[in-house]
Length: 546
Image (cartoon, rainbow, N blue to C red):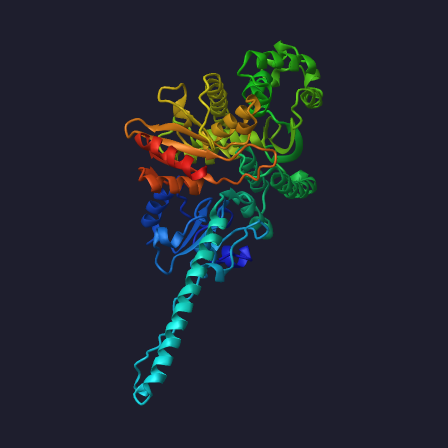
């Protein structure tokens, strides 16, 4: 069920058990990357705890069916995945959903999904019927048969409507309000909102925007909400200026350039490895490289300046850099070069844009250099603390490598025509032995590569029909086990609602062909598959979507 009062129905309920550091209470934090790890973690801890808080997982499946918990266990679910499973919505006791009600949830009505199984049993051979005439018995029996036939027909009609309602509701996968924003709202309601918490909420929202999980309208709306909080914190900081330390976090709202990591990189590298500019200028071609030179000349930036670190550029050039780049970008068809975002200053030396932190933490989370997923999660979590800026800077270096590898892979795929039309969708497969292929075995990295590849393909192709197609992409997962990871990306259009239909399609294609598939990821549009089953799986997917 949905929780309406987060403070009373959530925080005060679990406070006596385990939750936030600000109240100096102990808790156990267990990072999980998929359903199997979630089940294992629950089995290991179900005897010790009664309350379980699931963040960014659990809302889009029947939790009670998967975990089979005792009746005393209560789950608080703060998850962005949509649609919310109807059993979780209408479970009054064990499932509590920490989800903003103003999200467009469109949950079906209870009576359309659930129906009482109790039916009146009428016995035709009761003792009271012994003295009845045969004609009366026959009439009563005919009425009972007619009534039962009517009930069965109504039942079939209701079940058919239920299937249609559930299909319409569960057909598309999408994302709602960031869990980080939901948790910040709770802290604000309790007057415990710190600047660090506000920054984490901003990073959570920016992550959704970077990964194309929400629409531009949703992003701008949520930015407006956070901007008001930033203004409130700024006024509070001015009132308490004398009490602040020099390493405090100062958050600002900005219209900044849509260039990845440019303040920690060279402007040239950022232009070449940002998806937006690389796709619009088509930098994988000689013509695109020439356009880049023309663009820089139009801006009035010497190559010597743009190829050195941004921090080392002449101050005179950096003063009006944003306006100069935006003006020239409009001439080259890049009308969205500046975006609404936030930045943070830690002390006087360290400044980061929200997208910088997103790229750094994402790279730390999926870096092959860390042994286990738990270690990677811990590294990424530590990088969000202002006391561990060395880890954040390390994450920025990993992110640069990831972005370079992404653009090089995109260039390779487009130049060798690896993106092919399968009819209802585009398909691209990375082969074992491809440079940097290990960087794309994890779901978030592969999804980001797929989205950037689709954007670049749409900018380069002259086929109007192909511009409107979604993309399915496969990358090697384990050479030893012979498995691949496949992701499905919705069509790249200006009016895209970011809803993804591949989750259900993958499930049906795998079931229909008995493919050895593993639906282990919280995003349903990511699937693990045996490499030898890929052909029949794709054939079934083509048939299903045609």
